[in-house]
Length: 567
Image (cartoon, rainbow, N blue to C red; front, side, top):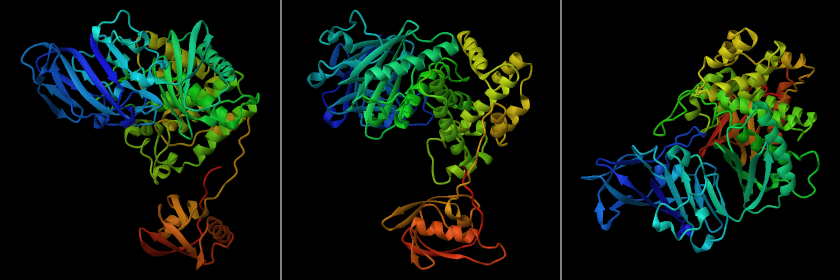
């Protein structure tokens, strides 16, 4: 058995002391993942690991030389097989669902960024011991790993039973974050499966209301697929001032949310916009237990955690999930039809505001997630599209198309789930094959136009066929610029490609200080834009725009040019 003991006495300095014990082989190597499954960005977790030292377990004074051989790999200099202890520290101050964070109130760990893997022994059973110290003694542990009985190391006899956890292998270990903190907890059952909720941070959550709504959402999702791929489930929630995010795991999810998004006593029967957002986050990550953790793209069943693992299919796994997260709120009865249509309208608005949808296909967006999605800049909306947003609307279009032919996207998901239970992964050919089986048509043109191409999604015509009218109201960005008032002037946040501002030479990050000699405000820029829009096209009118770029003053002359930014 591979054993990790994590010590948290230095929580005030955000440090975790790790002792890794295992039987090492000649030429033994250790490594740390460079990314965490479910979040497609190289995060270089090894950058937070301090000096790694090793000793012979039976003779702690006998040091073993350790050499770093790559950015995330270490090698032990051994002459024979022996039991060793590896000691190191990890800096843990990442307040997100992907890292580790320890301070005086909370111990939160994703093992992927704390526990070094033992090369060649990734399939060995693992024991994880949590030495939380006096400051956290008596506080509950939120984790979906089971406690181990009996203890395998005498050194852990001092720890309570819920502080010693077990995992069948390294992949299982890193799929189970844990938290030790003051927790507000509740639970409910769905189809005989216990679902637990554990909330840390300061909040005033109505746990009865939350568990009632989550129970309905979980029930709707299990009914969709026919069964659940887990025996129990845990919602881990951290309440903060304004952080937001989630990460899926096989039988739990880690969520971080503004505390104001959680339901309070007296929450109306119709969830507020803030609470609805939190329920959508829960629905999204819970749905991933099927679509990502069970139904997987090829290459992700046992992903290489040393490097990027590419797939053109994130529009399926994140896009379809983004379609169903809101749909499940409606199907479960947690929100009404008007609220669902509001959410759908928000998706369509984001889609239409993204001019990059004409530049990048969904399959390209999926493949380039590693270098683009998590690294947005001022040009992102001009050059790319979101496999979450456009993927969700593609799912809607596919669902409506299939329903016209007597089937549905539900049937596709059930077929995917059945294939996954038989050990199959998803390739680019899988969905056409399933559509062929369901409706006798692989929908070749559909995939070519909307997935591999940049043809506009047929939202208007498909929605009209089911009685939903799509009303579009054009909203102008003045001269094609997204602006923000600041004390030093008007900050240009984004500039639409081929807009009036772009043609005049104005760029993102410029500070507009004057328009036609008058101190600039967003209101003044808007007034000039509207004035020029109303001028006859044959008139050579322009507005003088003075901007600071870096610390240099520049003059740009903006002439009329129509710039429309979505609906």
